[in-house]
Image (cartoon, rainbow, N blue to C red; front, top):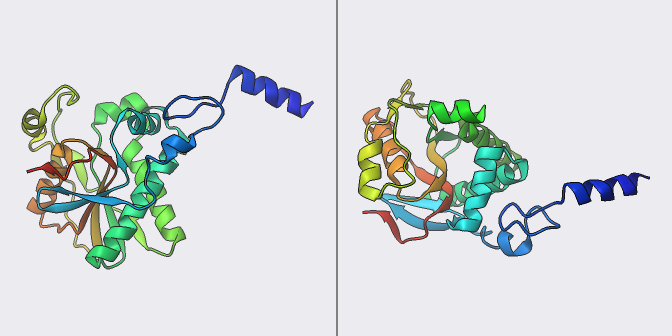
Length: 223
C-alpha cells in the first residue's frame, strides 16, 4: 500500500534535477560534477577569491532554487561548496580561528519578497558544517544596505560598480578576534563583493579571505 502511494506521488510530483531538470534525481551526476570537490581560485581586486563552480545556466539554476525557492538540497550544496573553499582558504592563508563570516547583504525588498533572508540562512548552514569538522565559526551580519539599487542583471561591469557604489554600510564595527571571511552565493562581475570590501575597510575591518559558491570563471573578475 505504502509503495503504491509513493509511486503515485512520484507520478504526480516527479523528482527532477534542480540543475538540468532531468527526471529521477534531485541532482544528476553530470550536474554534480560542475561543483568541484576541490575549490579553485580567481582574483577580485587584490584579493584571492575561492569558489567551487563556474557560473552557467546549470549552476545558476541551483542558486536560483536556493535563493528564490528555499530548496534545502540547493542550499546544502551551496553551503558545502562555501565550506570547502573556507577550509582551503584557512590552509592557504594561515587564517586563525575562530572564523568570522560576514555576508554580502540582500536588499530589504528582496528579503520581503522571499519572506526570508537567504544569505543569512546560508551562512548559518555553513557555520554548522564548519563546526561539524572542528572549525569554530561565528556569523557577523555587519554589512547592511544603505541605499536602493537597480536590478543589476542587465548592467555591464562599469554600470554595476556605479550602481552599487556606497550601497553598504557597516552596522557596528567590531574588533575581530579571528579570521574574517566575506562570503556570497554568487560572484559575476564582483561589484557587490568589492563594495562590501570597501565598506569593511572604511570601518577598519581586515578581510582575510573572499569566498563564494559560484563565480564567473575568469582569471581576474575585476581589474
